[in-house]
Every structure is written in structure tokens, then in C-alpha cells.
Length: 335
Image (cartoon, rainbow, N blue to C red; front, side):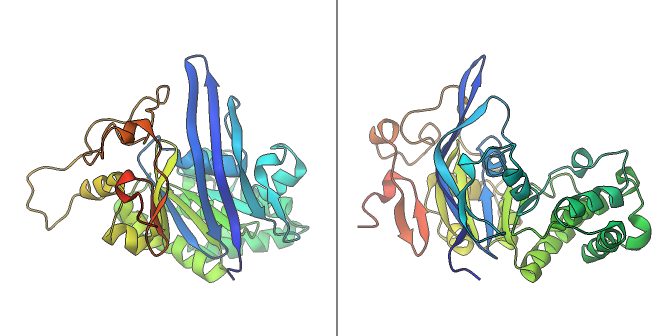
């Protein structure tokens, strides 16, 4: 069902006031996710991917503040549109949405699970927090969820502690806990980074299958374009706290329009390439305390149009069906 966006983020900006200065991790970020849609957020470390998801869940660092923008969300309980940016982060309403309507799969499950409570106790607590199930019903639901995510002998493994599970099994248990509240939106923040390659593939296939079977919206956060290519249908490319390109996954890979996206793709090693060395992106990411004026990528760009690139911020130009890029190369492309 996609009769309107489930999440519609418009011009979201976040600042962090530190002793060293003011950091602006998000600068006018806009994106939307429909019910049942799989969307990817991709970019280098420090581009603002995780800060974006933390803003959605209202779990920003103490010194961080949302300074502008809206995060319009269609609430599960009554289908009303609420602006998450205006809800008290510690309110009952936000707690019901965070972990209830919207769940997260964290990068490292050992930091998300308590080491002194069994897997069953932790997942059952999440179930009972968002439902009126008694202990026996919650136990049955935990076993069902562990079975759903492919953990062998779910009845027995439910009583294991997180350290007794392998990395892949812990991540599956983390996914089970994320599904415990029957969420509408599942945020997966680098969900396979800590796993070896073969386990990564199995976990990604599991997330993909569950997203489709349960009709979940998926927000996949990663630096890995290979993961994006096989898991989502629409992509937002971020650089220095801004979305610089967005579009259907095939469009982004076949016709990348922003110089940063092109550089990201060129930096991926290929088995068929005859090049003797990797092609890193030129230059380095500017300091978060001294963001460049104009286009955020102009300090590393090899396709600069001229002085305008460091003087003005480019608009979002339509470069294909549902495909937009923020670059002066495409100024006037959308008429």
C-alpha cells in the first residue's frame, strides 16, 4: 500500500554545539519513504547517515539540536500525520513510536543486547512493552520470531545469552527483537559491517525477505554500494550532511549524475578491471567545523563549472525519471 509517504522528511537540519565549535551534521536533508518501500541511504563515514536515523528516532546526542525542518510520519495507531521534530523526545508518544512503529537493527548487536539477560527476556520485554501479552504468550511469540529469522532450535536458543550466539545468530536475534513490536518502518544501520562476507549475504537476504513478506518500509544505511545494489529500490546519496543525488537504484548505478556518486562508483574495485591500482576519491572530507561554502563537494570535484561551485549551493535538477542531482552541471536540465 503506497497511497502516500509513511515518512516525509523536509529540509531537516541538526547542529551540535561543542567546545571546539559548532558542527552541522545535517544541512537541509529531505527524503521520503512509502509504506513497503526499501530505501537506501549511502555515503562515506561522517556524511550524516546515522545522524539522520537518530534524528528520526529522537535519540540525538545531548548537545545536538534540530534547528529546522519537519519529519512528518503517518502514525500506526490512528493514521494521523505527526511531525516527529516537534514531539518531546522523552514523551510517552515518542516512546511508543520509537521501538514500536519504528524499529532499528543496530550495527553491533553486542552493544544493543544486555549481556546479563537472556535473549528471551530481552525480546519478551520489547513485546510486552508494546502489547498486552502475558508471559506465556510473549514466550510463544519470542520463539516464533526466532524461528522466523532462521535461528535453529528457537525454543532452546531463546534461553541463551547473547555471548553464547555466533555473530550471525546475534544479528538474527537483533532482527527478531526489531520485529517484536510489529513496526511499520525498519531502520538497518550498517547491519552487516561486523560480520564476515558469507554471513553478510545471508543476513541481507533475510532482511530483504522479511521486508517483502511483512510489507515493511526499510531504511538501509550503509557505505557499501554493493549492499545498496541488491537490497533497495530507491537511493539517497549523502555527502557532508546533504543529499546530493537521489533516484531509483538502477538509475543511480547506470547513470550516476553527481560527481560524488560517480567517484564513489569508480572507487569500487572490479574483478574485470585491468587497472593496477584502486581509484580513491581525490582529496579528503573537509572538517566538520569548517564546512566549505557553495557546493559541499567542490573541494574534491574534478568537474567544477567555475567560481559558482564555491559561491552558491546548487539546486536539485531533474536528470531522469524520479532521478535528481544537486550539481551545476545539470542546471536547467529540468526546464
